[in-house]
Image 1 (cartoon, rainbow, N blue to C red):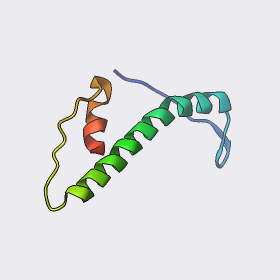
Image 2: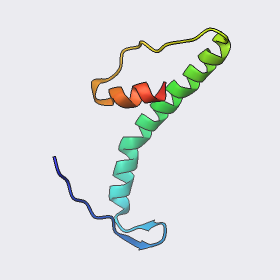
Image 3: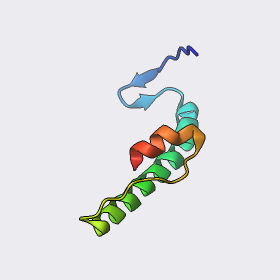
Length: 72
């Protein structure tokens, strides 16, 4: 699939379509929070298990499988 997009800014750091930027942020923000939580919990568990190793083998969301595995 090929997609073309244009990003329009009026000035450095000011987005012309604030509503669009807010919509994108609202979609991405929960995912980033979930990934951050997974990474934090994994680090805590790995540090607590040292010198043993922990291998990830949890179920992942199909659309986010690569990102889920990267986070761990």
